[in-house]
Amino acid sequence: MHEETVYDALTAAHGDDARWAFGAGFDDPLAGVDTTVPDRVEPADLGAYCLMLGDDALVLSQRLIEWITRAPELEEEVAFANVALDLLGQARLLLARAGSVGVLGRSRERAGASIPDEDALAYFRDPDEFRCTALVVADGGDFARTLVRLLMASTWRLALFTQLQSSRDPVLAAIAGKGVAELSYHRSHAARWVLRLGDGTAESHRRAQAAVDFLWPLTADLFTPTEVEARLAPAGVAVDPGRLREEVHGVLTDVLTRATLTVPEWPASAPPTGRLGQHDPGRSEELTDLLAGLQGLARRHPGATW
Image 1 (cartoon, rainbow, N blue to C red):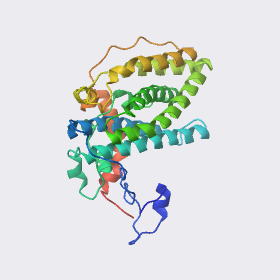
Image 2 (image 1 turned 120 degrees about the horizontal axis):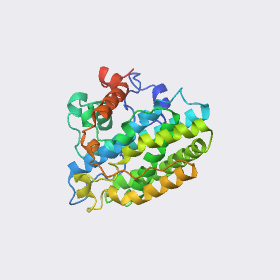
Image 3 (image 1 turned 30 degrees about the vertical axis):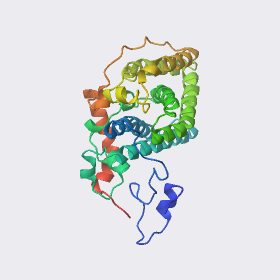
Image 4 (image 1 turned 180 degrees about the vertical axis):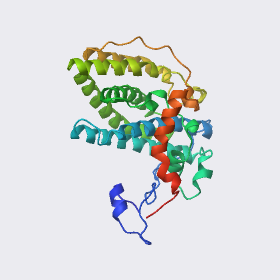
């Protein structure tokens, strides 16, 4: 059984008249894709890498969803929703891939056997089990910060996915191939808004510059490889994030300069602690609050149908 949209699944009658909840009623997201782990690759490493990329997408998606009913115009509200859905789709595939190689940790015990792997990982992990960067975790702030953050995150992610298309893992390569088109739009949309805000009124310029100054230091760990990435990159599965620095810096510098914004000095590299679940105290609190909203219903009613 397969529905094209969540709305089809919600309204279609099935057997006992159950209704869709937490992913039930959808096909395996990896159906038809070769999930064999490439040779000379540890499944645990592949799963951990997928968690890193999946968690970034899931958390950033949730940050964008926070703007629904709050955006300054209806068209932008729809745009935020569409970008969030793209990221949610990437997260679902990446978390499903992590589950397919057995990287479920304590989430499976908490969720129960009936919950799909990707839902167990999304809804039943605690903040210290999430492997996301500070850039996506930080509070959304105002409209300018949201767009500047989307520009930075999508620029980094697009550079990464472009190279991941040649990954030796067929699942990662397929996810990246689909994601490149999505991320190209995300980056373009954010860049247009940053240009509009930076080169707009005095107030929009002030807010855009404040967003850049706040978010720029949070990119410090984006280009520092974890031990997992250091093992997977030479094996042709992952990408060494250090190789992305020049491209990402060049794109961001060009956009910010055109927006008449001051480009800060590139921050010194920092340990990728967020990738290890070691979030700074302030970021940890923000992540805890965000996950409370994301996970509350699923944890209260695991595997619910209606």
